[in-house]
Image 1 (cartoon, helix red, strand yellow):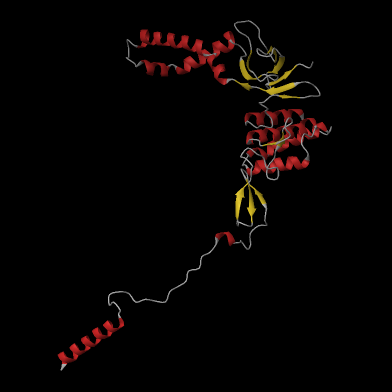
Image 2 (cartoon, rainbow, N blue to C red):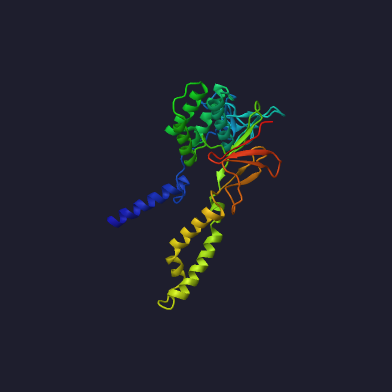
Length: 326
């Protein structure tokens, strides 16, 4: 009975499939699903900015378009300045706003501070100075962060101009010298500046340590040769030494001898300074001291620029160079 029942079931199934016209190996059809298309031009941002709202960044200005639901760049170039976000200057010829580099902004900031505290003149309005300071802070400039010595120096300069000094002259000179050794930009002005009211141009020069050390080279070379000759004639018969070891052994004698002979007889009281000309910024070098008994500049040097022929003076102690008033 079991085989007959199984055959009967298979025949019944085949007959049902042939009558329905359905393929047994094809997937069953499901109800069709309608796909809705979304038009991207009809999409709107619910919480976006207002239509036509312009947003300025450090490099470009972008504006929001409500119709398309996205931002797009305006016609501003990378060189164009955005006055709401950064400090800009106006070109005198074209009247357009000009974008400045961080170095140029630092120089304007430093000039404004020194002019206000040293001469009492205000180069920038308060709102312009605040915008410039904030711009430098966002750019990571360390110039806007004053340390204790720099703040004391500027406060002393301002009090002196008001006729109410807060420290002795010797203490002020010591503080200024310390700031110069630390390389503070408030005490050292390495770029020329000219004052319209007096017509005087000033700049602070630097000491040329490289050329100053070269002054000891001739005497040092001569002493080294004599020391090697002495070593080969006297020491070599007793103990054989490498020439390099022999030079290292005589280094204290060579150094002290070269310094003593150079400072006392060849270049006494020597000091070499260099820096730009206060008038034309051409690089100048000045030597203080005597040469083989011939007297040179002592405390103040008066030199004529080789480029613009302007006569300027340099002080030995402060290295401050200034043109002669006309």
